[in-house]
Length: 260
Image (cartoon, rainbow, N blue to C red; front, side):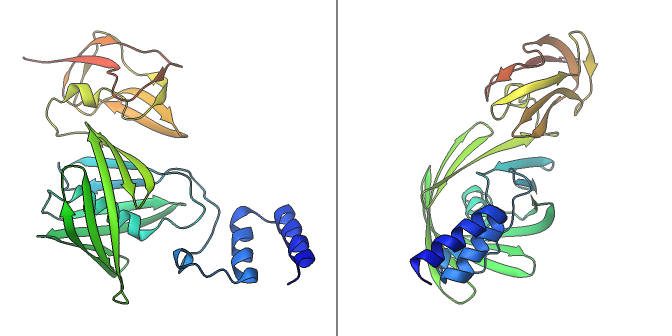
């Protein structure tokens, strides 16, 4: 393909095709074969947020919501492995995860035995070995199906229910949303896990609420995030109103336990 032909090709593609189709055309027409693109199918992102729900990591009813930068390609299996490996360093039990992306639901299962982590998804098993771990960093070795071994460097920071993870130079953030059965961790449960906007306040001062009742609705990145009562109690104060922009970790409502 000559330079003029390439210019004409790009002009046509940019004018007539969406991002996913354009990238696929570029790969096909220009023979791009970088290993990072191996096995990847490009498609338009239908939603910007990826949600993973977990059971059995810390608490029976724990939910973890993973937010990543918008991607136009299929969510990479290896990132799920990276995240699991980071969270599993001190956890030696089984967990099942549902993965929601582009309106697809997939189930992952992970187990850890010593320094070996197994991730099972769609009948495929990925094996990862923990080579080094300290308080904030980890070095993993991922054994790919063809026997190729890849080293993965992780750095993680935990602050309450918030997570920040660096994977081979890429940054990802996560926040654990505790719904029920986690004791009286009022400050973390009654605060926004990430910056958000208050859309609705569902209770008033003096209201009695049951464990799990929705108290406040937040919106962030086009997702509705409920603030739920971590235990039964009485609302004693509300520190926000609809339309307020709130930061992560700031308590939005106060709840006094019943019978204490």
